[in-house]
Image (cartoon, rainbow, N blue to C red; front, side):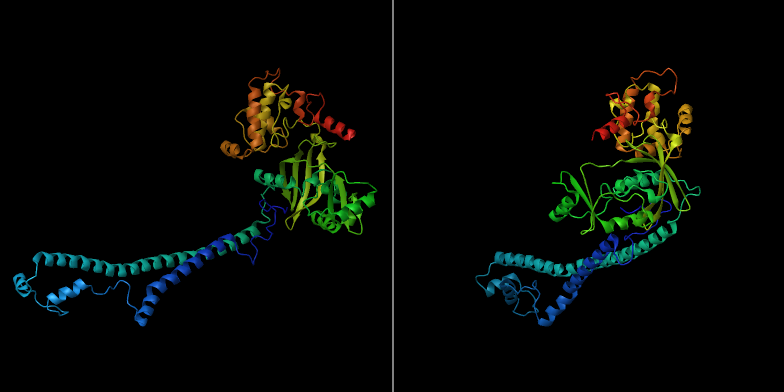
Length: 478
């Protein structure tokens, strides 16, 4: 994964927003413009061009009906003249035609009236579509102009965004301190498949990075396909009879490129190179294992100085020698990649004590984690979750307690905003701790902590061993 540019000091590179690509906004606007243009062309054709063509061809409009027999008959009664003559008295019609019936004439006149009304409506209907066409034409032109404006605005917005990103790429706080949001973004990146391995070894310069830990799960690189030929070459190289676990297979050139990209140094300079099986004829590294070394961390704070990020964090349930220490990892950013410099423990924090529940933001606590803790310790542990988000406390004792912690950075963010920022683990644990807090015994000394407050790494499970001891025992066994 590429580095993120949402926090100070990050670059704004990446393929998104670059020239030669049309954004989704522009694509949608262009689609509307094309659709509206087609509608306008159809309207112009049917409303203006087609009637002219029909007139040239001498085609009679569909709604101009032939004169009915009834109309011709009435003309005969009027004297046969198309222009008509003065109507005669009804009595004269009776003298001219012995079979003349006045009632029949009235009925015919009534039918004629209805027919004339119908013909009149047909002519009206012929004129109405023109109004529809004109209305739709005007609306379509409006949408067309709106779509054009949308395309222009989206292009201007993209240009402006690129300019702002470029202008803000080196923008950091005056004091260099990272905000809570920036710490969350860095935490997400450091916990990714690509970078988490850089936190699993201690080094004060990149030459001493343990690359076995970094590439253990592939480091996000595209792995070489596990084929029969690869398996055969691996078994020949190792002398094994069969493969009994999964194979992680990496191209040697990809490994070298990755090392160069994340340290700025060539692979040949590394003091702890990969100790995997190297198959020269295929130029690949192969590692057989059936487990994972994935350990997450919780970023506590950080700052930027001269382009170098220094981030303080805690491992979640790590089994290393300094598992109960806070660590500081230093890195820069180069073309959207993290470029690691060092990862060292702060031995002054060894023995923890800084956290009651170090991993309450990354897992659901269990009864064993809370067993034996008094009411005051549980109260502090519950509010510790809020304190990580920079909450200020009205209770002076709580505020004083968290002020003494190196990881605590109070902010002016409202309590409601902090509530919304909590993840689901934190919400669950607050309720869980509260339920125990209500029935826990009161401590003999307010604010005192039991021996279990040193963190989950040193808390004893139901078996009587700490998590660190259990992990070491498991390692010795396997």
